[in-house]
Amino acid sequence: MSNIPALGEFEQVVLLAILRLNEDAYGVTIRNEIEKCTGREPAPGALYTTLDRLEEKGLVRSRTGDPTPERGGRSKRYFTVSASGLRAVTHAQRSYQRLLEGLELPGLTCAQS
Amino acid sequence: MRKVDAAEWLLSMTTTPERAAATAGDLTEEAPKRGPLWFWWSLSRTTASLVWRTFAETPLLTMRVALRAFLLEVKMLALFTVILNGYIAGFSLEQRGIVLASEAMMMGCYFCVGELVARRAPGRELPASLAFFSMDQVLRIAIQALLPAESTARNPALPFLIPVLIASNLVALFAGIHLTRKQSAQARPISR
Image (cartoon, rainbow over the protein chains, first blue to last red):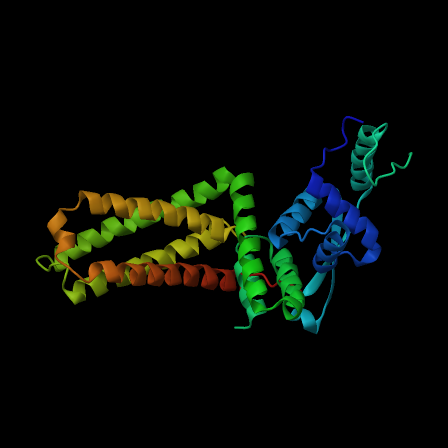
């Protein structure tokens, strides 16, 4: 349990967005997914530095796709969550759930894990 | 130069070539929906974030390169001073020829600094250049403070010239970086 890396709030948001997008997670779709789900528009700089940091920690993996003309001939960098990334985000979300247990927040029903 | 090329060029001075290309591609893909202003604003913010990250994660490495660049500049400035004193002593600062000659030397110096930064800090050229530039400005302020007041006060055009001189020095610096990176890429072709 102790070797599970601690995640910041935005790191969790990014990991969850990548998980939701499955095979189609790259810069643009991750930004749009975060915006759609949280209502916050993440700054591009914050997103790319977070993705780089997550990759350096081994929590996500990236692969290069094919270049496309609407991107000026540049390739997409697709992301997938690694096994340790999945463990880390699950651990972080469990912690949140434990904190929520017994609390009654307006409009929120806490799902039991 | 297309805007995607400009974006990739700028970003590649703060991260790896693959990441720079993908990020430039992402911004280009979103630009038609969000507008050109958004593109350049996002590019600036992304570059600033990456520069800050480099400083935060590798401060010693970045400062070491900047310090090397600064020492190179000091050596070259010392050499220029000897040349100027030896061959054209007696000329005063307001003479255009002297300003042009010293500026040409400074541009040569900045070009060499650009080459050094590109060789020593590939993928981190922008943070290292910014650190060098800050040291350079401190040196200039120190020189100005040490010079007798009349040597700078005599030339009324000097305050207007300073932004032009700084801009031309920066152009020379980035030309040095660009050409060195081009040479490195030719020597070691990268498949994309």
